[in-house]
Amino acid sequence: MGRYGPIRHFMDIEAWKIGREIRKRVYAIVKRLPKEEQYCLGSQMRRAAISVTANIAEGYGRYHYQENIQFCRQSRGSLYELQDHLITCLDEGYTPRQEYEEVYALTESGLKALNGYIRMLQKRKEGGK
Image (cartoon, rainbow, N blue to C red; front, side, top):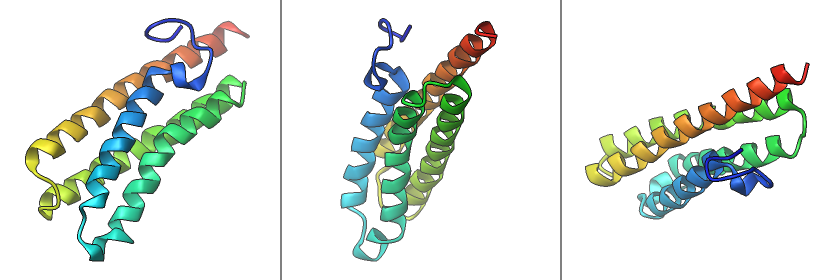
């Protein structure tokens, strides 16, 4: 079961929904980065943001709990990577503190949702033995 009902598609997974919002917010930040950061920091931020939702989706499509869990762990790593990039944006003055705090809080929510989803998958895996 997802947070609001059964999971019938990866888009029903709460962590994916939060990841989608994070991706939108990160893309907005990247669009405002200075030109010299567009291809380095900006590219890394976009890839990490895409990775969050893409790995949840790919794991969902694997149908094996352990593979799904591994893709979710990769997604979790991308969320932590994004947190570091957001700190860089704050430190360099590329994003205002309020925006940083809002997006950072979204990454924390995403981590909590993703960890809950991983725990659910682990319980199902153990129950299936």
